[in-house]
Length: 228
Image (tube, rainbow, N blue to C red; front, side, top):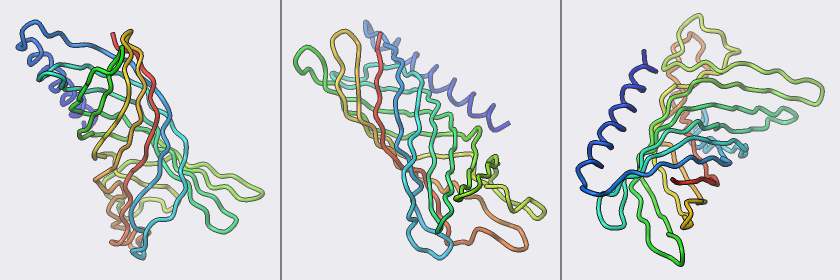
């Protein structure tokens, strides 16, 4: 049901975007496909209220966007991405790695200024995301255990303790800086800061997650794409 609601919301965004573009006279939308690397981490506080101390993981993203002019040199750029996020943490000889896959919809306002034979680009705006799958791997010197992640807003009594839980919805802010060549090839540097807690409420008798715990996605990345 939640996936269906998100799909309807994305369809509404793109329909509204096309309607707006059609009302700008001779202006026409352009499309782009893009992909690249993510350098992701979890930001926030642990169960004791201390800042999380984790390591980056390398993920990736791939998808498309559509770009419509809204004013001279300014564009509205909604898109859809598949994005792999997560984090790595160490506990003595143990290393835990979380990898979470999201479908995301960035909604950016973009400035494009002429520079040489192409355009310098600067974009910013919000994003919304929905987790669709994930896994957690616990490794020691002699063994490795992998467990599937379960997405839920609340962990209830009777839910297993060995399963990692995360909220499905994520949202935050994007910013990127890049260059688009005259032929349509472009590259950009991206940064993203999650605003929503992705750790769920824990209603089990012996709670694993305290009220102090606050986990949020954060990261940066590199994208290469082609606009046509």
